[in-house]
Length: 195
Image 1 (spheres, helix red, strand yellow):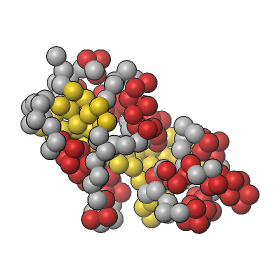
Image 2 (cartoon, helix red, strand yellow):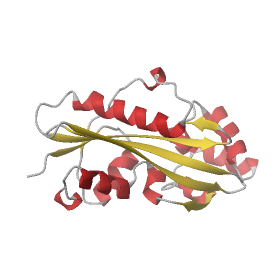
Image 3 (spheres, rainbow, N blue to C red):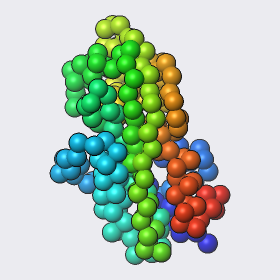
């Protein structure tokens, strides 16, 4: 029997991705203080944050469990962006993003408490943003959706209207790469269909 599958994230989008793929995770918010990690490389940053989120939740379990931590950022023009702090920041961010191409990085950390093994990987997806007007940006930010998302948009929500193209893993942009998760489970000796 496979161990419990635990999602170390309060993200509804990540939970919904797993559930749509047939995985019913136990959900635990990590409460890890991300501000203590300062890393300039986006791939290293998301992997480090994903690991710490997973580790902080894994420490709460005595029984066998697989704990998945994830973290996403958008790299654009040499800058790394997480969730915007407020509507003003979200508007300014979209004014930079419109008509541009960014890279959405998601770190994945999978801790297998039964085998005492940890895998840490990341996935990158290229995102082409539409050339929005100031009015469209203001209207989108007013919905509140961009304030909940790394990268200031939700591909699976209203933000999908403002993305012209993606190159790479679709689910990665939503917050969790399902193909990468399958590969990580394989590497630990599990079949994704067991969950």
